[in-house]
Image (cartoon, rainbow, N blue to C red; front, side, top):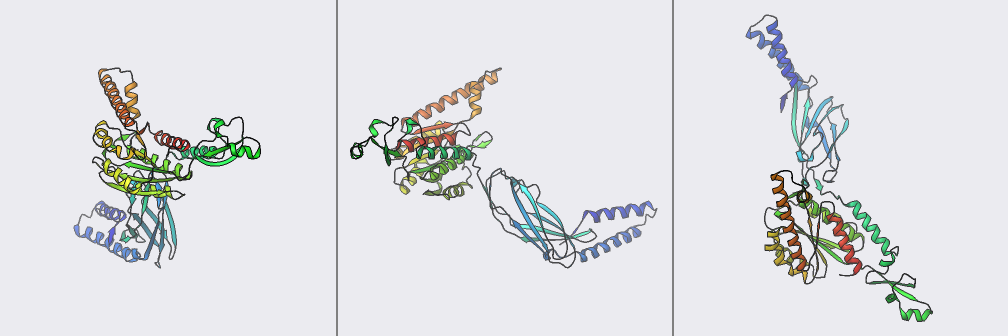
Length: 435
């Protein structure tokens, strides 16, 4: 498809100005001059290589974390016998925030050129660019030839693992405790037998193994370690209450960070972690597993989730969880503590899982509401806001007390603290053998 360039428009404009400047105002003269320019443009079009002789390939990174910087590379190769001036325009979504989605290159016959651009995605999800437009300009730059090329690709933008460093700290600490580099108060924690060793002054008297001590004629104690092969299942609420923003980020994003931290910590310590994502229906299920690939499977299962603007069916999600996973486990329910939603939907369904499983409920506090409740109002508007914030916090405290009364442990924390505190709750459960 021939496309006139800006240079052709400029040449036609200059030719018209020159004709009038020379005092020749005849239409015939102007038509002759413009016709000559157009004839040159047709020659330029004929000399332009066909865009179908230009080969284009795109290299995508495959997986990128939200907000991280990555690179897209285009490889452009000429199959023409003439030099080619090529523009390649890619079909990149605006939310990828690419520095540039167009590439201009000059190609000698048979030459291949690589060009790259960086991008920083602003939205999670799956992106599938399908076409590129290839435009080849003639040697005079008056006319271009353009064609579209099918170039399907897949780019997955995963949620960011903001608590990764916190997870590594807790994994290292737990491993140190496991090999015996622990405080005197914590020595011998857990309920799974580890080994026999000589008694030391810091050991608890109840840990002495009297039979072993009698055999070797000196005090011997039993040591225990935290159990392995325990199961942690995260139930991720994807309903309307998770669409609200805290710190300019939907609550769902904070919850996803907690999912990744719990999965990383549990699997690295030899336990099994799984996921059930739900709203008014179950959206994704990842069976409990361990090993280095489990975190990737969990992340892959939830990266396309967007909050459904509907009430979450807790009863349905709990029933599906108990049907699939009958072994006693630590169930971590990530949701929002809205009194109405908790009272109508979550609290009635909670006894289904509390009887058999250890249940922890995690939610994100809004630090802005906390700041409003603690502020010193300077005008009536701020006083009303302070009163409303205080009432909201009191309502939240009543909701938490109700859930604890039903047998659940509740972790309500500000952004950045939810994931570490949930990991601490898991480590405490593991160390005390409550599963």
